[in-house]
Every structure is written in structure tokens, then in C-alpha cells.
Length: 281
Image (cartoon, rainbow, N blue to C red; front, side, top):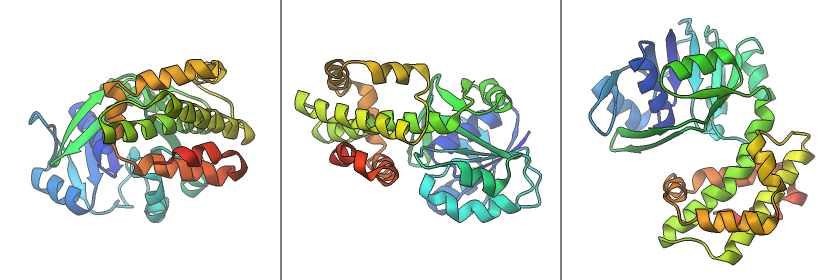
């Protein structure tokens, strides 16, 4: 397939590497230091030195009939590239980033027949000195079987979720407290207190209330189960998780993304979001 990836940061670069290694014709659209590095390497390079060849450009060529354009920029950056996505002759445009906002405007912008959404839930990657150090697990989720098959065949295990809007909002409500705990735990090089864990539990509960208030279902099943657990149990889980390497790795991603999610959730339901504002990093 002929694939373009817009935004080859840590996540986009991981998909570019895996898809190129699987034999696809991969181009990346980059800017700044990332553009300079990939232009020099003409490849995505792992921390170990392994390489996967890619083409690089400063913008998406609207005349190329890509089989897939994968958009892996941050949510606030999407508006700037929507005009080029509208003009593109790509057969499918898949957005892949963390958001709590409605995805219908994106569907309308590129056309229902071309639109897709996914989330790289099983991909954790750090980008250091122009090279990536990926960890790929199960958990990447998309809205269509063709994309799930494409990514799975490239070494990124992917499942299908029919209601990506509900899934995205539930995921944001769950991951916001976890990322915020990670930022705090990393800063102090230690776990959170029981009292702090209680505050994050309240934020998690508030997030699930907002999801329901917006008319979305709690999904997948493990999030619905988490929402039914007694508060002391969830508090204990968060307290214990704050001492794990996984949470510290989330903290290494920085505070920008949890701040963004907290602001999106607060804007969606200001009257319900006080516990969320209280834990915003």
C-alpha cells in the first residue's frame, strides 16, 4: 500500500517504521527538527540503529492517491492541516490521537466515505535524539477491520471498536488521572499518598459522569468494570500503580497531554468537572 503519515513524532514514527518494514511504501510529512533528521536519514531509525526507509515531505501532496493517510499529530494541531486533508485524493484518512472532543467535525471535513479514527493504545514510544525506542503491546484500537488487519500484519496488534467516540471519551476519562499521577510521581521520584489517590479517584469518577452526560456508553468492558468498583478499591489501585514503572513512563511523556484532556473535559461539562480541574498538572 501507499501510505502517508502526517506527524512523525514518537507514535507516527513507530507506525512508519512498522509499516515500512512490512513492505509498504511509506511517506512522512514532517516539520522542524524532525523534518531535518528524517531528511538526513531517509529512514526512521530505532535507538538500536535499525532502519526502515521512508520518503519525507514538508506537506501532503494532494495529487497522490494514497491508500491511507494516517494523522498522528496532537489534537490542537489538526485544524491547521484539515485544508490539505480535504484536498487530498487519499482513499482513507485515519486520525489517531488522544481527544475528548466530538469527532463528527473531522468526519464531515474529509467525507464519511474516507473517514476513520483509531488510537495507538498498545504503542508506547520515546523519541530521543532523533531515534525512537518503541514498546508495542496489545491495545491499539480502530474503527474498521481493514485498518486493524493492516496494522496487525505490520506487527502492531489491533482490535476493532464500532463506537470510537464513546471509546475515546472513556479512554480519556481513564487515562487523564493516570497521566497526571505519572507527572507527579516522576517529579517526586516516588508514589502518591493515599489522600492524593482519593483525589484522582474522584477525578476518574467525574470523568465517567461526564461521558454518560454526553450520551456515550462506557466501553470497552474493562472500563465499565472499573467504573463499578467501590471507591476504596479504585483508590488502592491508583495508589499502588503510582509506584510502578508504567506510571513513571506515562509521566515521561510530559504534562501537555493531560492538561489538554482536562481542559477538553472541563469545557464539555463545566459543572461536573471540578475534580478534574483539581488534578490538572
